[in-house]
Figure (cartoon, helix red, strand yellow):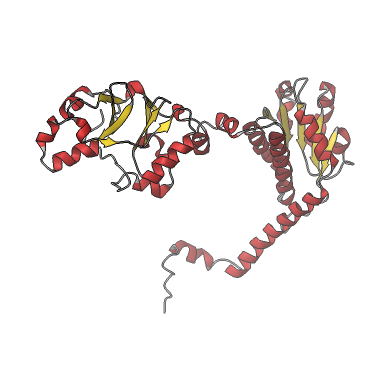
Length: 369
């Protein structure tokens, strides 16, 4: 009798499971042992952290040049990640490959720099070979290593000791616990430094312009469609006059912003409003003043607001267009949901494309040119 696979598991997993020399329970136990070993090492570091960490922060706070981070092998990969962390939290940082340093890359190091060196043993050949050259350049060295008594520890101005760590690898060979510890200490240095230096959400947004978090921390002016790209008309014109006058090349917005005689925003007429007239075969309404059919008192966001505020309104109200106005209530641009859909929670992004009782939702009935 052939046992059928569990429906939610791909068949390939069952074929492979039969080949494992251990049970699923044993696999999970082995995985938990690795996590427990690394967790224990981090807990040990919490209590081991001492004045050397503070001295390292002093050096980094006084940094006038760049932070150069170096390491070999797995430690080098951790160094590259830390470069990204320091750079994104306000500290200019670059990676230096120890072997490439002897073939010209040492020219990246200048007076005023600080070098952070990662090596658990402190005896890595390429790292040890590099130390005399760094000392000749007169740059301070911060070491993250097992002991201040190894070669690296003795050469550094500041040594943050990790202590003797047993690797989580069952052979005790593959860097795992040690690299986790290096990463944690490096993150601690970067984040404590950024906090001391007053790094703010606005700074984070400046260094992360392409990410969703950076977008939310940026301002509405960074993402809105400018007034020149928007459709604007007077609220005392007819629907037909508004539609004829408000033609724009390129990507069109799904709403027309309507203003009074003083230029203040008083309403929106959306593609979905027009669709309703067509569905109702109400052609006579096209010659009515648009203020009789527009959405009055539409939700708006003030210029200078954070993008997170605009995203929250779009998501909560399930609307597709959000006018941006100045303090006088005059439109200065428009946030279109199609431009920021990636910033919305997944469910809200989907529901924002449908009609809602909470407010107008655009149905695009015209092809975009």
